[in-house]
Amino acid sequence: MQAPSVSRRDFIKLAGASGMVAGLPASAFAGQSTFPDGFLWGVASSASQVESREGRGRSNWDVFADQKGHILDGSTNAVNTAFESHYAGDFAMLAAAGVNAFRFSFAWPRIQPDGPGKPNEAGLALYDRIIDEMLRRDMIPAATMCHWDMPVWAGDLRDRDMAQRLADYADILTRRFGDRVGLWLALNEPNTVAAAGYALGMHAPGLASAEALGAAVHHQNLAQGLMLAAARANLSKDVRVSTTINVQSARPATNSPEDVQAARMAEAFWNGAWLDPLFGRDYPQEVGPLVEPFIKSGDMAVIAARPASIGVNYYARVYARAQAGSPLGFLPEMENFPAQLIRTQMLPVEPDGLTEVLTRIHTEYGAPDIYVTETGFALDDPQPVDGVVHDPKRSTYLQSYLQAAHQAVDQGVKLRGIFYWAATDNWEWAMGFSKTFGLIQVDRATQKRTPKSSLGYYAQCIKINGVA
Ligand code: IFM
Image (cartoon, rainbow, N blue to C red):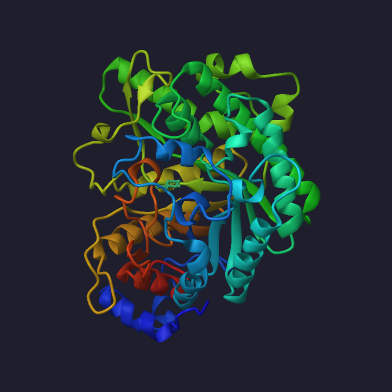
């Protein structure tokens, strides 16, 4: 497969289209908001959102998406962006913009399609090629081991044995790819998985009960501990091994005592239920009744992996409305957002919440290195004009989030990199293809990739290692 040729000059053109700082030398920004040396300027993706189903086993998300009424636009994840045959072109475009790290995930159903034990060599070989191409383009591979897609044979997270199955899978991955991946992340947003998949029935496997929720919380934490232990046993000490939590601070939707209480629960569920045990504390008392039935002797020690770095996904705050009878005790819904906030297709724009979560993790959890493993904006993008999709709002929002991240750095936070979600438009789970986050547009009929002007803006930031 031939990668299209994209030059750095094309990106100066793109930056011009973005109306930003095209052509200015890096010295023009001396003393302004620059990031530490070695900062990772990344973009992110996940297997189940970009790869096709070709060559892999059936996943929990295939089952969910194939059931009528689950996906907003009636689409499925059968083809997605056919990343497995377009990655070289995607990487060429991103590398020309200066992107120096690429976050992707392995599809567990591609590695172990039919059952536990011996992995599928064709699946492993595909990721060999993808990783080698990243390295050829000077992009550090940042790999999520499991980003929501699980093989059907493995069952679901109500089953405690899932933790060991995920640990065995982590062992396979780190043995094979440990010599090339620079940053390992065990799970992606276990909090979203538990809330949307086991409490609200909105994501695979479509469950909604307090029992399923409690099991999904504890078994993912346990899995994460076992996965990190398996990875550490296989990797050299200088390789970064961590996990990614969707950290959003919670506020009440109204001033009612019920909503104030709901926000306390949301805060504990969304953040503390994951970060506290990972860094050696007990579960927050608010989630005790949910998880206690599932905790066995020795579990908390396994979960307390105390990683030296942590992946943080941040989009916006959670606004909690009390909901009697809901397994969570609150609803994190769209209409709960304060009306004055700018809204994207999905979430509001709240840059100050990013400074808040980064400084909080720094002070409360022993100042780990932090990677913002996702942040991004779903917007209604226009059709391309002269080979560029003009999306100035995405650049403006991104600029405000980068400034917010930089404020955290000013306050001592050890921020080591940012990964924009997403590299390309992709399949947004239950929202199908209706939400577009990418820096690169993908034509669904032809799979043609077109850069957005926000990629040009990102290129300018990368060039000055700061906020353009
Ligand atoms: O697309 C998702 C991703 O898979 C996990 N984090 C949030 C993104 C946007 O909703």
